[in-house]
Each structure stands twice: as structure tokens, then as C-alpha cells.
Length: 340
Image (cartoon, rainbow, N blue to C red; front, side, top):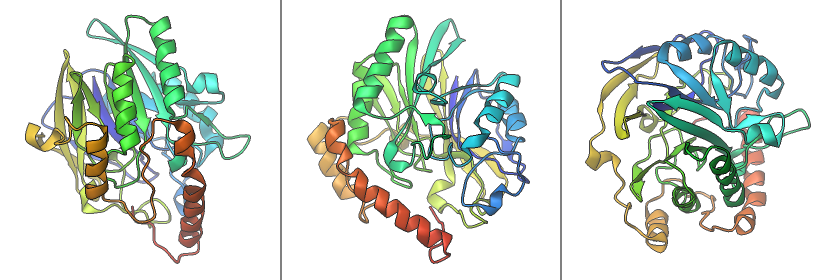
């Protein structure tokens, strides 16, 4: 089984994936946006995939995709068409649906004599929420809901290895949010086999907790520069280094890929353990909070979420919604360019 990051392939983009290693088993990716057959979608300030993404995923061996992300409602009306295409091509999906029940439903995968249960969650703060009555429902990232979903899966599939997959943290943040690190630890304590994350558009270090792997951010995988948002959406060099996490017979390896900024993603090497294992692995909660405050990358008017209380964390939401609205207005009027 392998896990890759964000997949967003628009109309007119043909990705080359060059690798000298074979990706083994069932692939799990984050489908960043639904499948939209409108070739003019790139003229909007939205993200979606064109139908060509199906052939790319099949070629790579991707068998399941997470839909719990902040772009799944950019074209929410394409949900039924997307699900139809995924089902026709035997690609499973999880993390979103037309109801809370569907969004919280796990995907069950049998591989290497083990059963895996995948659950997807999206963080409300970064836009993983409903926009209107016709929007897709995203399984919400909160301590209460995550615990509830894990407990439900444990009761229905007692032998399954539970893998929560999160769309979380701020874009281009190099460190996991303190509250998210705590949530990842809690997931392991609640019975999760490992934890997978994405959204920051860059690779974050991984952490071992109780001998279980936490992969905070896989970064982008197939997400082109200068195509979306009328050609304004671009990523910095820090986003060009990517990662695929390979789980083979209980052992993890971290494959380093590199995006050339055009159309090619190529295998580079395996990540060295000293490079990929987080130096804060043994930090307690307070030690990590101090470390995060000192070393985090995104500091401008962005609050730190550090509480295990969903109610306390919600106190930051109003300001972040206002900030997001202001940024959208500036981008749409051309005052601010869209560069993550």
C-alpha cells in the first residue's frame, strides 16, 4: 500500500511520472477537487480535475481517493458525475458525501492478509465545509467526531487497521499545528494503525508515536504550476519536493519525488531517516508548543490552535473566516496574486 499527496490534473495537462521503483499495492491519494468536464474551468478561481485524471490514477495503481478537502465544493454539483466515474473505474472514495453518514463511511481495503479501514476528515478552518444546500458534506475534523468515527469502525470491523486521513494545517506551514499533533497522538491511543495528512502543499517530517507512524503532510503529488486560478496559482520551490509513503509488510519507506514545475514528477531517492524523522518526536505537549511558536513558517495574523477542546478551538474561527474573505476579494479583483 502507498500514500501520495494532492492530485489536481486540469484540462490540457499531461503528467509524466518517472520512477525507478515500483509503487507496491493499493495506492491512496487526495483528489483535490471533483472531476469537471468543462474545459473552461481554469478560467475560474476554483480547483477541479479533468476526466484524464482517471487514466493517470489507474496507471499509478491508485485504488482509493480522499474527498475530504477544501476544493471538493468548488464544483459541488459535479459530485454525482465524479462518483459515477470513480465507481466505473473501481476507484473507491471516502471523506465526503451527500450526507454526514456517507461522509463518515470508511473505505475497506484488503491487502497482504490484512483489512484496512480508511476514514477521511477535513478541517473547517481551511474551507472544508458546506457552502450551500447543494454542497457536498465533508466529514469534519474535530476531536469529538474523529474519536466517534474511529470507535464506530472498531466496533464494526474489529480486525481492521484503521487509518484516519486528514486535510489540515495552514498552506505552506512546515510544522504540524499543535492541536493536530495532539489529535494524531490521540488517534493512535484510540486504536488507529497510522495517521496520514495533507493540505500544506509541502512535505512535513514524520513522527513515530507508540511505534505507530504519523505522516503529517505528503505535500503535492500531481498539481501543476500556473494553470489554476486563470494561471495565477503557483507554488514556491519548497513545494517541488514531494513524498510517497510506502507500507510494505508492516515496514515504512519514504520515497522522494521532485516536480520540475512543468509536467514531470520524477523519483529522486529515498528520504534519509535523519531528514524525514522529526526532531520533536519526543517532545511533550508544552515543549512542542514552544518549538512550534519559535519555528513555524506561517505567522502573519494566523492563530495557533493548541487545545483539545473543540469549543476553544472554534473561538479562532470568526477571524479566520473574515481573513479568508478579504484574501478572496483581493485575489478576485487582481489586487493580490494567488501564490501559495
